[in-house]
Length: 147
Image (cartoon, rainbow, N blue to C red; front, side, top):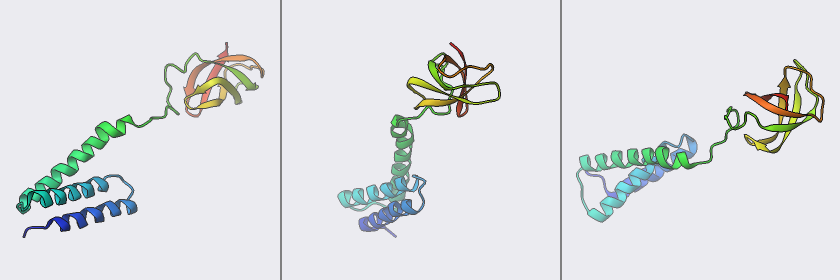
């Protein structure tokens, strides 16, 4: 049994459409691989079924690896929720007062980890309007101390 080029194209389109129902972004590459095999068959003529399936597997895996190694890495990554070392020591203005076991708000001149204003906690009471320094990032809030 030898598959024709148009059968690979139909299988490829079906797999790409299946990606719409299963949004995992894996099935897409198998569909594109199948369409690539269809184009190779159209250009090269006849290939054995073993060669066709081998080409499909290699093309699909190569595109999957290419996506995760090259293109996915280049996408913008947000730093929200991470305690990047460059954030520690940043100075901001306390918008609302903060006390032990009570959260306040601090505003920064430039956005830190994607936000200009952060909920904050402190070990001592600090009045609104004071300048504070970031000591640590703890999940969705920052720990501050007087600057």
